[in-house]
Length: 205
Image (cartoon, rainbow, N blue to C red; front, side):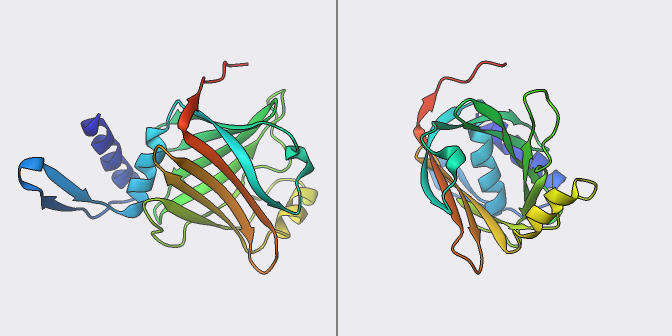
């Protein structure tokens, strides 16, 4: 397992254009590695691959009626050196994904949403990138320009999200937090997933 995770980190290093690593001897206990915090964060994501967890809404300002009384869950259903794809389920709606990918400068978070027939929703493919190394537990993704070529209505809606920052925090075997804040406003959104109690993986539709 250790060698598998080490290999994945090496491949991520290659994907993002190289990374520095410092090794320290720990005597009889073996070796300890000081890694780029984003690589450790990526490893935490990879460790969740194939697992599902229940979530709870902690904060929503303004209130999101779509989540009112709905069970929440996440399922890490696709992992490789190029991306980690996390399904965010709201009740029976299983058509939202959070996609984390390595870039030459850091990490990127993209939101994807499709309809039951497989067509992509007008509000999809938005997200942002890290502007710094973050920490091994938490990464902030700052909103960037909305992809070109989608509807005017979609672009107008996302233009209002200027200053949006999405945060993902992972405390292994404890909690994963997905959070949104909009700088300069009271807008907040926070969901916490219990990593200590995995759920049965959902069956494909």
